[in-house]
Image (cartoon, rainbow, N blue to C red; front, side):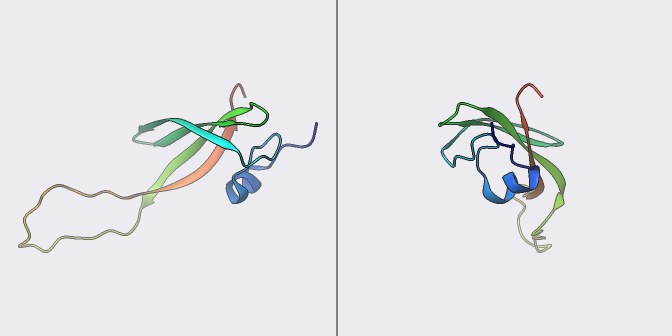
Length: 88
């Protein structure tokens, strides 16, 4: 069996960490105040893992003018991406 992709290689190329395939299925996503998690499965070898996005702050803030009517707050999060193989 070949060596697994490193975290950096995965984040750059978005390939299966096991077989290096680009044929990936993205499934269920969970969010909370810390970040989000996205289930991924390789269509070629069947490996599955979770992409993790960590809240690192905010970006592209647009502050409304004082006289504009407030329809609701917009929050755009900044996330850092990583992954873990299921069961590890």
